[in-house]
Amino acid sequence: MRPEEFGPFLSEQRKNKNMTQTEFAEVLHVSTAAVSKWERGKCLPEVSKLEDIAQVLSISVLEVMQCRVSQEPVAAEAVKETYAETANLSKAQYQKRMLKWIAGLMIAAAAVGIVIGLHYFPVWRVAKVWWPSYFTTGEISQLAYIGTPEDRVIAKEVLAEAEKAFCDISTPYEEKEEKFGKLSRYATEAERGAVSESHTLELWSADFRLTDGTMWVYYSQEAYDENGETICGSWRIPSLWYLEKNAAGEWEVVAIKEHP
Image 1: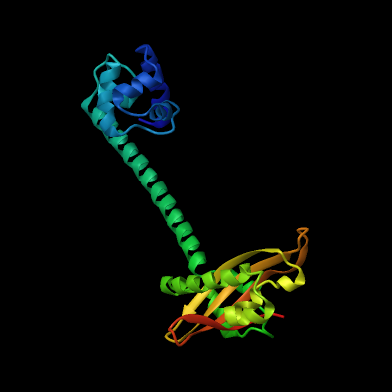
Image 2: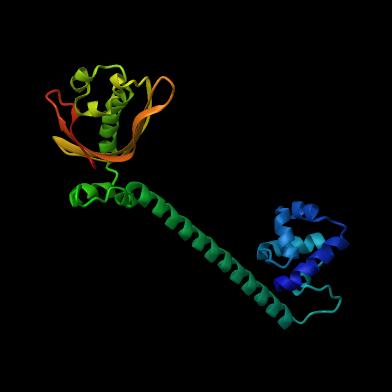
């Protein structure tokens, strides 16, 4: 029984029973798509379904496998060969499906692995800060790993404080450093006529030890006057923050390194 022979035969016998593909599929407890594939010669049904197909079509299992209805007796040897051929074809079809499924699973696993790898090891960011004359190799290498979950939790707490500095446009210049420390450089100076600001602040990597740590941060910022015009700004800046624990045991930025 070959798919290209079985398909037309099944279609003819089904139509002889005045059944639609949908009706035929419902009786066999399979999908209409499966019946369509059988009749188009795309694949064969499982061997376990042959008896059900024969019963619905009111013919013998052997006639189903031979793809012809015959009134003549069939030799036992011919029956044996037909069963063997059908079993082998069914097995080959199953193995082909399994190999296709395994290949698809391997491709999906590889894709997931690549996505996960790029998430935790985004080495492509190195290209955005590759200034050998300014950042050291050790500083740049920190971009190869985003940091442990614990490191990133600490970093997000620091970023929460940084957000306050970025958003501040009211604190007088002489009070900013006392209020924000090194992060005061990101506070917008109201003295320059700024009435509003906007910014993006993205954590690239974090590495915290017992008493010191580092964070790579990527940001953009703009300040606007009362007419909504941009009066100053910084765009797409990779920034390296050095941190230490203060007397209260809290992490604070003690130095910021950005390319001039």
